[in-house]
View 1 (spheres, helix red, strand yellow):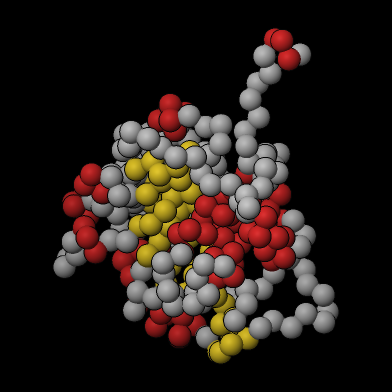
View 2 (tube, rainbow, N blue to C red; view 1 turned 45 degrees about the horizontal axis):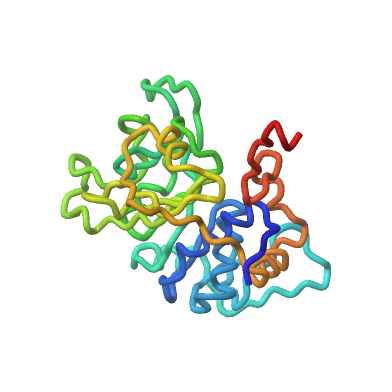
Length: 273
């Protein structure tokens, strides 16, 4: 049974969990609170074969809760998984990461490195490319965007291209467009994927109270829109209970500004005042 009382963060967690549903026995890496809870939710419901680590050295048979834990907490270790085994998974396409890029362009290329046209003197220096180039060519990736706007979904290419996308001009030697695996894009207003014509970004669902026009206005490039776009499914009571179990300190409430409700509040009419 679906709930009528839920936050936007909880809606996004449930929507993001769908990214991992059909993965089978794949290592899920959710970077950030909402992506991590999404992977935990999926492992606990629709894909029990999903693999998750304790972020140190073990694979778990049950995801760890986030935040401080009681002194008597015992994590459910299943087997050892040090860094060497992580890399084995990465290179064998047995990993699916959900990351939060600062920029995404029309090709699905992303930027986590720096902002500004001059790479030697960037306006903003961020993480650097880190392992994203190799990760993006070696396994599936999804994107989490807490604030959908044109600064993230940019016109033209990303300032620094850190990951592979559906750009024929930048394909590594031996790669074809069909070798690239970018899954879902979860934002605070909608769900999207790259299944439009010629791998165009496609609108999959709208969060409650959001219009197609708003998505178009906040995206810096053209996206594919089907005739009938459904509303993102509301969380069930079971899903909300599982989320609360793995986030007992309600850290999810601090991930989006002002912790908005999942169903957008509409402005009151003059007669309602």
